[in-house]
Image 1 (tube, rainbow, N blue to C red):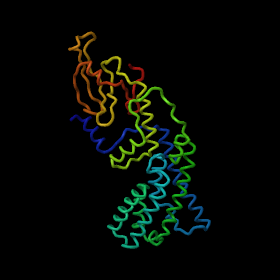
Image 2: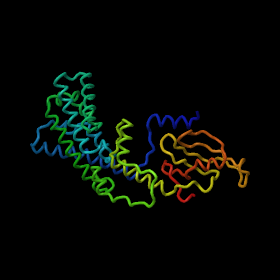
Image 3: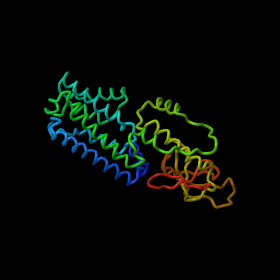
Image 4: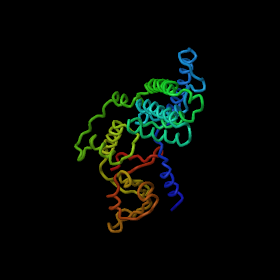
Length: 326
């Protein structure tokens, strides 16, 4: 295995994805996170100073709100970021944490039980929110001040923090039409995709998605509406060019257009001269990504042409289709 192939395999094992977001989107997410946490501190402190609440200033914001801010502002349309996930994830986990504390104390195994039960509860109540696990843990090991709050911990600071950060999230993301929050609002206000001519041989349905996700048996952090829209855009993109490339040219890069483990990107390293006899007209190729990564091979040009769906180039660390190439 070459060094490049080893590094690629290591990235896959570590789950390091290609980053497809723009610098503008990264900046918006960072600014949103800043405003969210500052807003929680500022509003809560103002309420406390007004005398409406009695709370130790050191616990105006719980640490798990920082994790919620990452989801709400970096992944506003993710399933883990939706309002019920945030509200239910934090409050249910806080309730479980306080209950475990009262029943069994604050030992390490109790902390583990509280987090484990919280995960199961969030699953069954359809409000999985990873920061909720930290909230359950805070109720156990948060120190004397947190322990003394008892079930009041759910109201102050948890519920107050949730209300403020969700309000900031809705307000902040409203300024950007593609980031409207909650996700349902973004899909509802978005213009419908224009119909495309032609009849597809197979048309996937919402029921197909449900069956596939059930068979996968793993939580997917995308809403059904977002998944449907993503696939529809992908199908429309695929329909722009359904033919094979007109020519197979040395130095050019091609994709077989398949999905999952069968997807592959090959570059033609060398090719026989034009007008070579068919049985001698061969190409040498190198696999750049996907199935057979970083291997080399040789085959007839006609075989490569049949394998190749379209030509691609690399832009922003992503393989994109070259239009009008066949």
